[in-house]
Length: 321
Ligand code: KIV
Image (cartoon, rainbow, N blue to C red; front, top):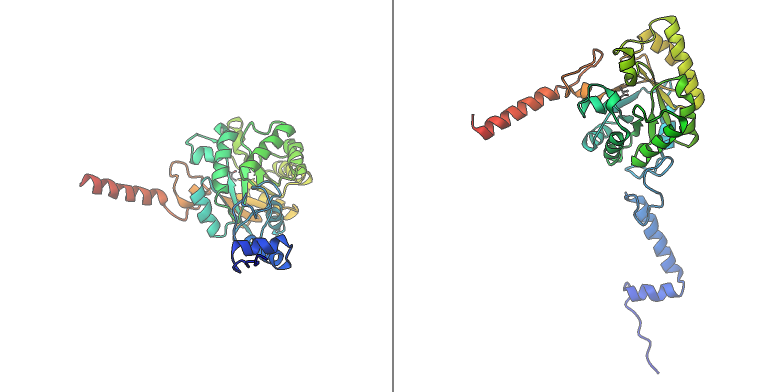
């Protein structure tokens, strides 16, 4: 009779032989490997990552337990009246990583992209294709911050178009979208939030209307203007926005409306501590776009000066002058 040869414990044959008999030992080992693999940081699409790449409501795998876009948007919404929200714009991967390391709450891939990165005179030249390209770059940083993509002009003229454009931003990596305007955008906001995509509103000075309005002007100066902003904000809240950007609204009105609204307001050019948070264009904060600096900007650095100094020294070194 042939003698049964025992496989070396730890060898593949040993495991296959035990697995073939439905051995609980092999089952437990497999389970341990699976649990361990879920704990380490895995890229989307790895065999152990059960969720699809960033989509609205999809898992986000990072340095922390999985958090969905909705969790992030809801956490920020719950900050109403609490710890102020610190938001900044970002348009590329390294900036997104650096800002995220500093604990920024929201990274907005704003259509200010057109002015401070692409060299257009205003935001009315920005296309959805350009936004998708930059949203994808920021999303590749896998930030803890909520990644918000701006819907550019002409990309949300009807509710159906707004939803389709929002879906494209989400497919590129946005976790929420932002659009400009109040009452006339409410149905579009409803279409997007109804599909499960968080939306941030934008009221006051609307840069996409700069040509119609003939410049960047302060808003909410009169009781009538303040009332119009309030009506717009209420329509947006009713349609499901999770927060609203207030741009260039005079401080008294921004403060009064922020106190009245149930969602956080995030101010830019509205004075300090008038809203539930602040947003700044990153190039204004870093002083890296010296050709157009809004009057309300408070630069914390002079990257334009640092760049000119470093490049000047490089040119001298290379040219030997
Ligand atoms: O596009 C942008 O950067 C913005 C901010 C000014 C809020 O909308």
